Length: 399
Ligand code: HGY
Ligand code: MN
Ligand code: MN
Figure 1 (cartoon, rainbow, N blue to C red):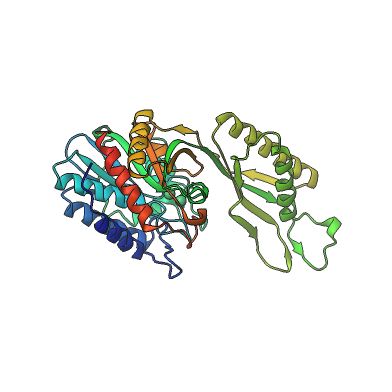
Figure 2 (spheres, rainbow, N blue to C red):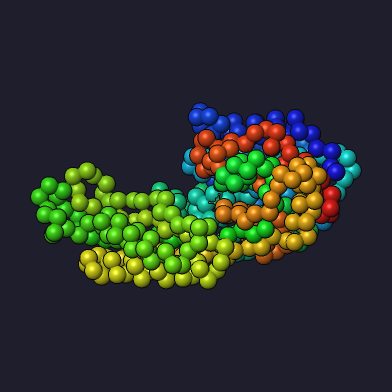
């Protein structure tokens, strides 16, 4: 087992939390390419160098701590959602730092560390690792825009002074990511570890209904073309039609809605909303897409609305490497006998991007009350340390 130092690990987790601390609980505001995100990445680079690793930024802002020769890659992401928790991604990044450092200190296996950029998808979905793994073309990604219209090219230009080359994926023997569960199951069962079997697939797009902007007081209801009403009808229609397609694990969300011009006294002319859905089965994701497209077309046709849809982002479900899963399971039983389970990940992770290049695996630690993507996100420190110890044991069987 790699002789990790839990106190140093916890201290680094709390230091990382300070970059973009929200002032509410332990929450953070550290979106990709923001000032706190860049500062956090520069701090990580210094930590990697201090640990004896070669620190390197790549052209999209991911930051690497590289061991010589072939190595196991351990990490995650240090950017956050617009309102994020202190552990989402950060846990895996600091696990990578601690394991890489402790391995070097003890003459152990070669371990490299990474914090991928924009996993939280300010510009898409797991953008930094998808570009690095070749799943997304950099030139195409440069045209992606965030909800304020900033392009990926403009955002990454903020880190141009740090950027080096892309790291060669061939130097890594596999990828291991430790992450908070971001759901309720481990916490409710009083379990300490989740060994991830697979990561669900995801589909993500924007839909725009265009109606007729008008006066909110003088326009009779029966003569309106209100795109917010169209969206409401659409949401009801897909919920009905999904009933005989989905399972209790299937999810769909419209997390961002933009109403133009956004005044209390104006019947809006345009409504653009995000449409995201996730499931463990590709064909179910495809069937849901057809239902979504048909329902949007019917609502537009029936109400005389304009309808446009953005390009679709599609990531397929990804199985975790069986051998690495076995190593994690054995380590979990050693560290938390009888208090672990195998489970699917309903959240997306950088591991999903890397699975096309190398064997990948993930493990979870509990999220208190299952809360994540919120300032209240938290995990007991004993569970954080247990997760590190599972990783330290499992790695010994992976290299
Ligand atoms: O949305 C996700 O699943 C990830 O946490 N970004
Ligand atoms: Mn994450
Ligand atoms: Mn997240």
